[in-house]
Length: 105
Image 1 (cartoon, rainbow, N blue to C red):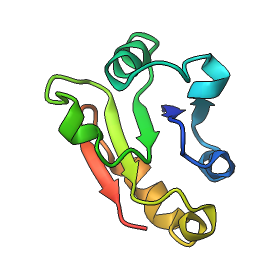
Image 2: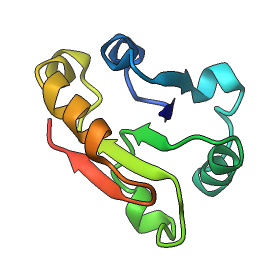
Image 3: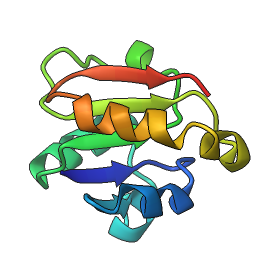
Image 4: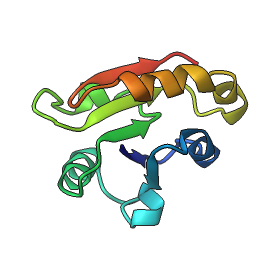
């Protein structure tokens, strides 16, 4: 699976998703893109999943017609996220195209 980490998603999480290809918006030069633009570019570039900490994304964007799955981490705290690695991994493995999920941290 191709995963794109949005701003705020802790990069060290990448090590725990080694079975997947993980890029960041910063690495791709997409840090300045607004949510709508980012979602479109990520889909065009063949990403399967956007991982973000933006809890308002589902209220600010129309997500119904998206093929890109979206996984929202409900914290930006790496120490807290580390305690939920297995839950995050399970969510990544089970998410389907176009689905929106939140992981409580």
